[in-house]
Image 1: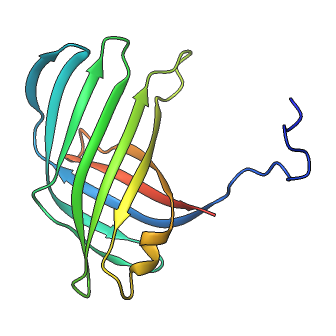
Image 2 (image 1 turned 120 degrees about the vertical axis):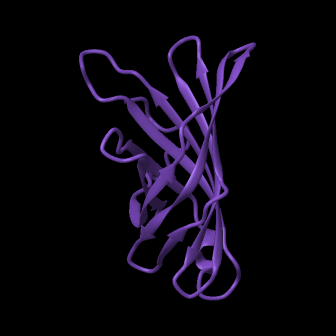
Length: 153
């Protein structure tokens, strides 16, 4: 391992803390045509549910996941949607996902960074954290994806 450039400050990796998981229901993929860097797609978000230790509720319909399938096989997703908590607060989620095939039969690389915007009040703490996530398809059993979200700590 290369020594740190500033040895007086300890080299520490961030930890994670589970925040919520969501089952996001989706409509069939809409093909948007070929662009200069690959195939463009859009997947409408039709609903779902989410739950975690400090919040729970439903995924609101009306969001969408815009996708770019690059020529090198990597898929870039950019989803924008809202969550409504059981007590009526609306939280906006902007989720950027990278899906890349791996060699040797390993599962695809499927990780994301999320920007979360919540109203001030009981969920204001969400506005002060950085988030990462995972994404797992639930097809063909159901037209949905499982998203798990973690705060960096």
